[in-house]
Amino acid sequence: MSWENPKTNWGQAGQTVPGADDFNRIEGNTQYLKDEVDSHKADTAVLIPKAGSTENNLLLDIVLTDKKKGSFKASATNTGNMSINGKPFKIDASTQIPAGRIKAGKVYDFYYDQSADSVFILAKASGNAQPSDVLAGKTFSNDDGEQVGSMINRSGNNIQSLLSEDVIIPEGFYSGAEKVIAPSVQAGDIGFTEWLSGGVFSTSWTKKLGYVVGISGVYRVSFDLQNNATYETAFARIYVNDSPRGIERYVEGNTPITFTEDITANAGDEIQLYARSSSSSQSARINNFRLTTNIQICVGKYY
Image (cartoon, rainbow, N blue to C red; front, side, top):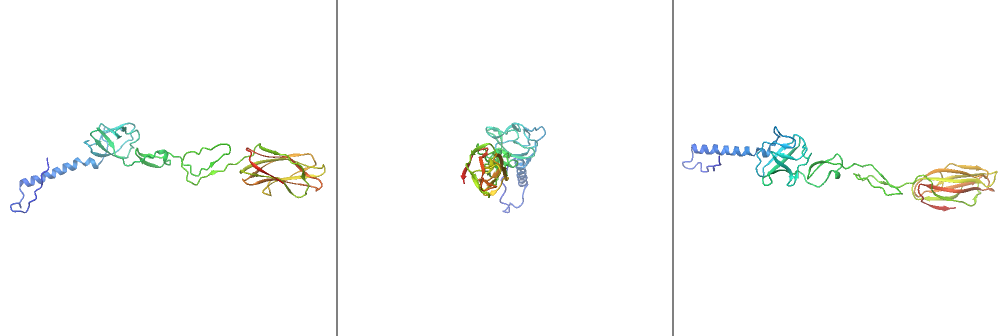
């Protein structure tokens, strides 16, 4: 049935009472409009795959004509290349819908291109972000549709730097509150030995030597202690920045004894050795002073 142009001269002389032809024209045009509406219902309705559809091959209640659009609600997630009513379902002319691209329960828009004899998905989002660019668990959409991020969340994870080698920063998301922790040293056997001459005759604590350390950490301090006389006592103690830190050591007589102690110090601290004698006429002698770590880095001072 075709459309007939409406009559526009009602009310004029001889045109006040409709006849059979007028009613037929009105009825015919009404049917025409209904047919037109019915033919486009699929353009606005969300179609449900019909019986006989599979996850990869959909049967929809729509006649595919050139540039005709439609929508469907997926009843299953696809596992491979897809078709709609026997026509290839594609992203573009050369790209099939990949497995997992269509998700069960989601609604998708499409159109049919007669020249390509294919159905194409209508993009609702665009962009080149990939899952590795987005925080794990967060969803986003790009040219390939809805995606889930895979970037590892490393918020709160500080990175410990090393003196001996470069540290590879793990890929992932950092909030900006993290930091690279300054390197530190540990007590070890790498370092140096300082032989001291003379001794301390004072009965008061006297600073004998000191070393300013350049890196925070734990330093191993070792020294030999004895008195110059068999009947007097020598005392020694580790200080840091002129404050006592180590254990007070002492030796009665002139047989040397080795003492070792681990001392924690921060960069810029001065590790010092203080000594005193039980008598100002005999000296407390310190020999073979050793400051060792797992690296060698410090600046010496002598007093």
